[in-house]
Length: 189
Image (cartoon, rainbow, N blue to C red; front, side, top):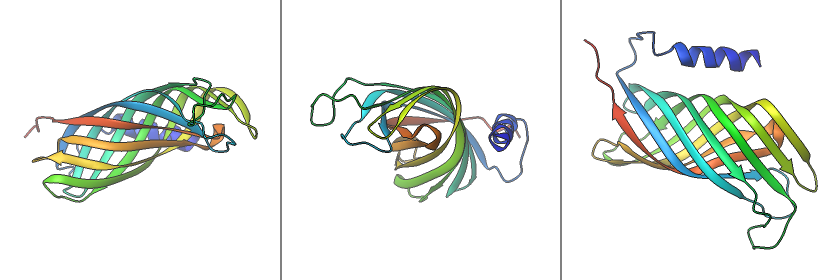
């Protein structure tokens, strides 16, 4: 828990520090179709909802960026599995997402694939109900973000990808299929 709080403090103060290795700064906004699913399930259950996130993009080189983020995910169960059969299993998340991640990308104009990984915290209400788990928790849990996607456009300002937040403490993961756009910030010289 102390490591997560230290990481959040570093992420929030990173905008104040003028690091020499940061080449460019941008703001990245994402919106998408939110999903959550239990880690252990008899039925194939995926609960859906809404996802939104904002990131401060700190570009260190053409192939690596550091991204402190804040976002939220809201998912709820409709009482059915993927085959449209009734089920009692569910994995609901209503949480604020905070943390930081690193993006490694292929520096290619028009279509640049990327992968991201990091660490963060989810603050909210989580419910995981399966044949193996009965978790109803409110509060703070850590998560591990992992994203895969493509940056599109001449300057790679459009982002289309899958973002996942593995939440081991509540035996579920949340994620999204999201569309994002990047807005460059003016560099002070």
